Image 1 (cartoon, rainbow over the protein chains, first blue to last red):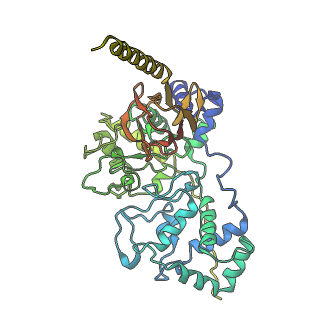
Image 2 (cartoon, chains in turn orange, green; image 1 turned 45 degrees about the vertical axis):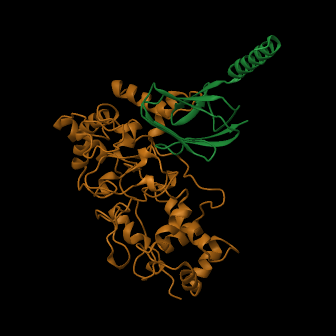
Image 3 (cartoon, one colour; image 1 turned 180 degrees about the horizontal axis):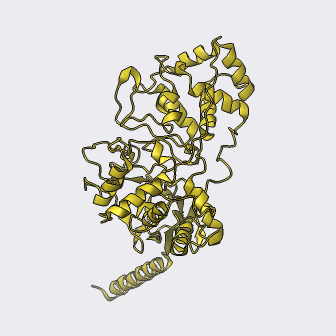
Length: 336
Length: 116
C-alpha cells in the first residue's frame, strides 16, 4: 500500500468510526471501505444456485403484477443501475408515484429496506411492491394460482425449496435471494484503496479528501456501502412526504429518508428520494447550500462554502465509486 | 403540641429523612456512550442492561455526528432530541418493567433496559 499521508490519517480516523467499542486495530479497519467477502444472508434462506435462478425468473416475470405487464425488473432495471432513470416511479395503470425507485444494488447489506425503512428484511421488502395497489397491484392468491399452473415454476420451486410449495413465503425468499446476489463490483476507488496508485484520478483523490473533511459527506455516507443506514431530512424544496416519520413518530424523522448507497452512483440518476436532481453536480450544490427547506433539517446539514474546484473533485470522487456493472443474463420464463 | 406527640413527629421525620437519604444514595447514574453507532458502557458494547427503579441513564454522544435517543415503550416514552458529540442527556426510570431505547437517526442502535 502506498502512503497517502494526510489522506491515510483521515482514512484511519474514519475507519475507526466503524471499529468495535473494544478498539480494533486501525490496520484491520482500513479495509472497511471494501466490500466484505461474505454476503449477509439469513439462516433460514441461505443462497443456493437453485434459489438464485428461481428468484431471477420471478424478478423478471411481468406475470408477478396484476396487469401481467410490470416485473420487478421494470423499475429495477439492470441497464439503468437497477433503477429506472425516472424522477419518481411509475406504477400500476401508469400512476406516477411519490418516491424515486431506489437501486437494489447492495441491498443485502442494508438492515432496513425502502426509503422509509419499513421492511426489516429483504424477504418482507420483496413482497411489498407486488401487493401494493399503486405498484404491481397483484392479488397474492391469484399469483400463487398462476405460478402453480406452470410446470416450469413447480419444478423450480421444488428444486429451490423442497417440500415447501409455491407460497407467499417461498416467493419472497426466492426474490430476496436473487436480490442478495446483486452487489457492486470493484470500482476505481476500491483499486486505489488496495494500492493501485493511479486507479483513481488525482481530482478524485482530492474529492475523497473533501468527502472526508470539508464536505462532511462521510458523516452519513460511511462504510463500504457509503451509507450509515440512517435517516436524515436533507431540506429538499416542495416536499411534504413524511418519510421515516410515517414509521416512527419522532420529530427528527419528519421528512427524513434513508441514506442511499453511493456505490455505482453515476448510474442511478436522478437523485434524492423524490428525484429532484438530474446530476451529481446539482446534488453537490444542494449540500453546499446546506439544504433549502430548513424546517426540521438534519443537524448534520450546514452550508459548506466549497470552491468550484472542490465541488468538481467531489463529483469526480463519486464517479470513481462506480464499477463496471456485472453482466446480467436474462432467464427463460416458463410458459407451461 | 404535646411534648410526646412532638417527639413522635420528630422521630417520624428523622426516619423519613433517613429513608430518603438512603433512597438517594441507592439511585445510580449510569453513563451510556454512543460510540461507533453503538451503545457502550465502560468500553463495552451493550444491547441490554438492568437497572433499579429510580436510576438514571446519562446518554453521552461520543460520535462526530448527531444522535437522537428515544423510546416509544409504554413504560417510559421519551425523545431526547438530537445532540452532537460531547453532549449528554439524562433519563430517570421511575417504574419497573422493560424499556426499548433506540436512536431515531441510526435505527441499528438498540438497547433494552430492564428496570427492577
